[in-house]
Length: 255
Image (cartoon, rainbow, N blue to C red; front, side):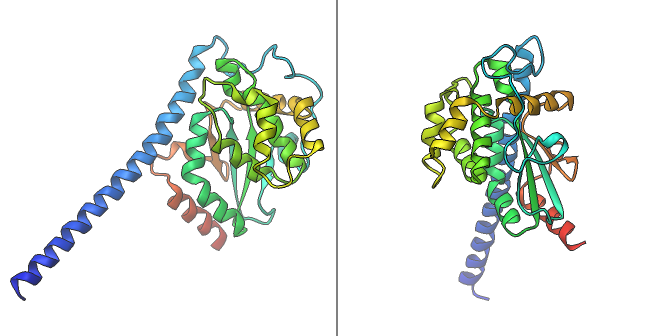
């Protein structure tokens, strides 16, 4: 072998090693983002006297519990996405104002969509108001109600994603503005209708959201997002990533 060929192979090996180290570092950063953001949402609990005391005394937080169309699970507190025949179920407790929830969405959304569209995964979303209770405001409540209104229109998943794509800073209560929520509905084809607008403005599902949040409180969960696969908390698995989630779901479908 010529010296030139040996140098070329050595350089290729070195480039491959550098690429692998970059991939490892990127994966570590992604995990750190999820863990770090989750800590922000959890630590916020300590800033109020009553842990997870969401929406107490806020206008529109009470009233009859009117669940959105197709709500499922215990007491009808979950919005389902995916086929009933899917062998794996991902249970998500989330808050549209929570930055850790957005990080989870950013990292896992493509994989979750892929698995749902393939009929291998069903997701049950529980919409809570953790940040409203910790930092004040009503954006968590109003955004959750608007998402439930989108569910009535059969457009929950797309609007759900739009809300996270346009999430304001945690301390800015942008989602408390009905006009903002309706404007964002314009990004989802056919959603911004008089029926949707009335549902958002009247807080049709506010009582239901409050009921979901009460279940979150009584469930003893430590923060958002809380993500369960088949009832097991995957947040506790430090090795969890989209590839591993996909492997677990596909393994369940093969069994």
